[in-house]
Image (cartoon, rainbow, N blue to C red; front, side):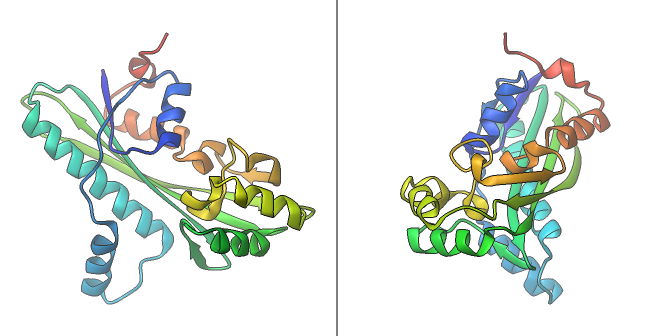
Length: 215
């Protein structure tokens, strides 16, 4: 069973590898801001975080699934798409990009709890058959250490790690020691919920062990 990850996220790739899966990877051709703006304009509302991440996960998976179906009609497997965002006090916190924004973010998050929203979309592709899709959203609450010092924040920001990740933190690398508690599937915080992904795969008639292809 082939697995195609519709993402270039190193964290999502690492997660699948740790779960025994060596996927193919493809970058989805999706203008995320334009997609969300178009839907919000059409529906005259701001999408809440769960709808936001699910919309983008589905668009990414659909784009790559359509491309591989056209380029490789013999493809027999699944296409996995995902998207994540972090919410604190009702505010969406994306990638900070600058050290100043990352520092301000960590000072605001210190001693607080936020929610990581992760959208998942899976397409089952089989030669000669119509594609089938399953999707879901997972959430995990993240509590940050209250005793994190200003010097630790400065050092973490200076490492560069928080600048290009949703919420400005990781749980599986340098940011992990500054997180006290995770409520929910921990892999959700890394990049996608493996337990959610397993349920979606089974909905499409695929057993999770059939995806294992790493020794």
